[in-house]
Length: 237
Image 1 (cartoon, helix red, strand yellow):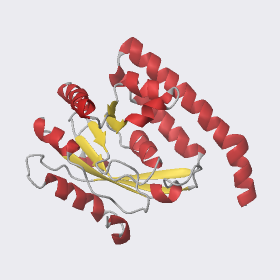
Image 2: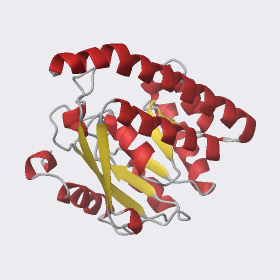
Image 3: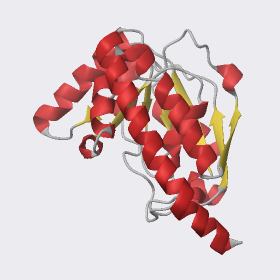
Image 4: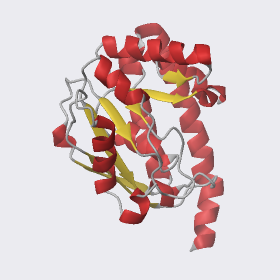
């Protein structure tokens, strides 16, 4: 059975993943250039993410979608288990948003260009770059867009949730936007940071109740909410 799956990966899955990614990137970029990134920067990528999960035999279960209003702007904060966090949130959150992502992702051929055209925000940790990053995020939030941020800053190496950084919570407070914690569970088993090829599996995306960003403990409350939907061993950073 494993041999058949390896054949499927090499001859069917990987070529189709590459083809779908190229098509989605071109559609996203050209659509965003021609018509703006609000619609074109989200819906083609949402379809792309769902196709990627299907091709790799990964299912995503969403819990708590009724807790968010499609007409409300939020700052979503999620734990970062692996690459499939992207597909889980993009494909199944059901709420338009922009990513705050690592500057290094801009170097990915076509994908980096498409993300920039779509209005996603690259995080630059240099002294000058931090100010530019915050301004870009502020422009998106001022326009009524939501943001998705991984406050750990990078994928976990161990499967355990790491420490949170304050940036996302500062933005939420500045614009008086509610913070919605998201728990992603199962993405580490599908494709951890040390792996190049995914395994079939099941991911659970849990949407928690919104937290008032004015609460001085908003970061810790968000962390606790995310941890509440993880096994104890995964929640310890």
